[in-house]
Length: 474
Image (tube, rainbow, N blue to C red; front, side):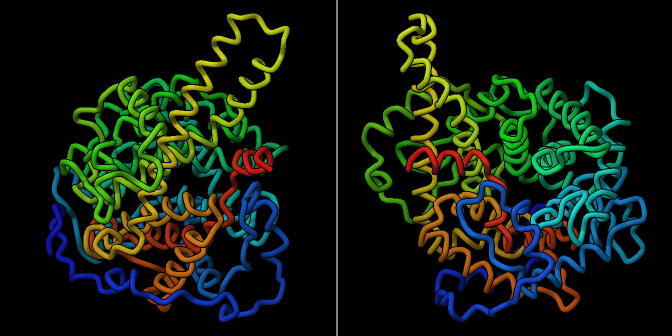
């Protein structure tokens, strides 16, 4: 099989058999004594609904590999593989320059954060602090108007999932650091950098939630990362324009096709219907919930020429479902405020009317999220859905991360089954040096290793709003 970037890829048996794997029993997992990594679980899992597992040996091996590849300036390069040529096309070979770039540095730093370290505490504190120096330096040097935060061009991730991926990943990692770095010069520098980054995203976002010039093979990923960075920033207390958040959530809702109970395809591949979905709808969500979502989809701007999914259902579904998951979490605070206004007899009628409108909007997003999650779960036993493009690439790892971060919020049997499958398969394809690499498109060891590690540590994803939501339901 050959992809649009001319990568020849063998059919990937590892993922094709995923649906047939027998779940590992919890008792079969290796017992590990508490170590220095466990001391930092609080920072790694702030607000998580699932108790973090001790770091496994494969995870520790992968983290050690990442750390060994960090440059002296705090950044990470691609970790090998092709690059885009200055005059177009691709440059390949053993002697390709591999300078550190923002996107790869951000994804590597996120993996180190998930391990339990922060910029000031833990085994990888110095590595994270140095990575933040690198990221902040690029953001500070960048202009204030464009959507770029770096002058490094032609990386794999830029060519494959969008030229602004560095900006969206910078917003994400800075937002997460803001949640754990609460004082000192690092915190001040992060606050300034995240403010500038979010402002760039807001200024360049279109009313339909997309971004002009965001072109590539599968830009649905950078679109998803943009949504995640805006929402995580808002969840951790950064100033984010509410309209930018609404534009992002509107884009995800508008992509739902209620007739087929799937997501509409992006610009790159047409409709991406999802195998295994019943024609009548997903579970019991075909009634009032679907009706409310229909109104939300009509209200949201359409997205002709929007983000490309490369015609791969896994890419589209995982990103859009995670976007709705993040929007739902961000909306919780507004939902609670609206409820208080309606419960207060002294609230003016005008404020109550606004509060009712806000609750209706939030309800539509929640209905859409439920439909998307239910549909995703129904596809987890479909090998053709899970294999993505057909072999392992950075795009597949990032898709699995989106699914993991969606299912861990449920924390039920669906999450446990998925998490065990991921642990079994990712451990199987890990290289002897602790890294992971791709067979198509995004092949660099930095991005593939970091995203694989993030999947294996997904229960450590900080979700403060989700924790509050669960508390409110008790």
